Amino acid sequence: MIPVPSGVRVWLATGTTDMRRGMNGLTLQVQEALGRDPHAGDLYVFRGRRGDLIKVLWDDGLGTSLYAKRLERGRFIWPSSADGVIAISAAQLGYLLEGIDWRNPVRSWRPDRAG
Figure 1 (cartoon, helix red, strand yellow):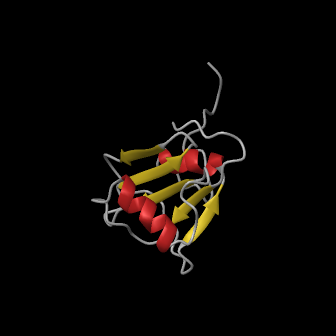
Figure 2 (tube, rainbow, N blue to C red):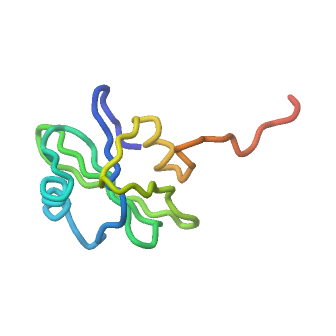
């Protein structure tokens, strides 16, 4: 899990992104396509076409980090919005990284009795 400090905003880049892009290409996409400052300390999350790979771009003030996660089964739940970027909370990012539907998390299993 990425240690997200308090006050950091998380942005999902809606649609699909070319996952061949690295740090520089994604930073340029944040700046030009999303119209945001990639060095402001926010996290930017991108998803590939197949839906099983995401990349997270984060500039913490000392440098830029690029995290990637691929699901072995299933796909990441992704919004379909026209404006290009959606803000989510750090808790919702945690759900997203676990492959859980972050829009409406539901416990998949609950014990019916103790012991």
